[in-house]
Length: 240
Image (cartoon, rainbow, N blue to C red; front, top):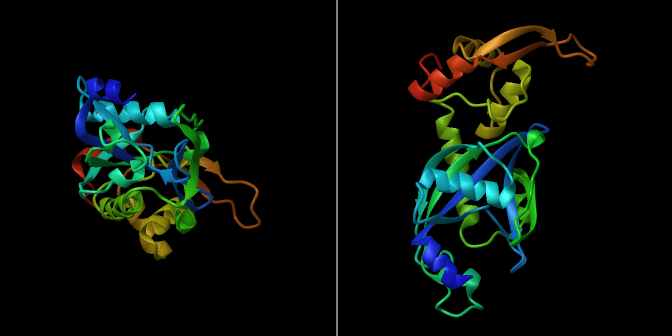
């Protein structure tokens, strides 16, 4: 496949999407394990000579995981001189994959409960992994560093952009969206202050429904106002 790859893909350029999900009040990241070597990686890949970079990343995610229409945003560039060569150390130096690659990191958000993962022929596994348990996983190349930087980028972005549309179910409580923010930030937030701020953003719509089944008072359900949410994505948050 090496000679074919040289004809199809750009040399020295790859993309590594860090796809975060939120489930059971914990943050997850999507990883794959290749048939070659018992190590975990981000579902990355190479850019074709005839496609735009953003289109390439959507294609890569679809081919590697089965997911489509994933929210994406660039967050970093990774170019240490030996970041990928060691992973293919058993192969000849002429192998396309063994050359030095500069990788573009993409931050992606997806709801794991709505995902139907499909691994590609190069992988033995494609799984959502709790970020809190990443220390138990043997990650290849510099992918642990990429994930850590993606998480830092996500924490920075929630101060200026709304978050949750791609991570929460269609209907959710204020407590659930607060837990999402707390999980990403890694700290507890004052409930009263958070509720007031999130309501003032104008990105939520209160529904005439309550979450049933608990022992306490049934909390109100909310959904995102898609139009206002998209405006806030484009223009930033003004009342946060």
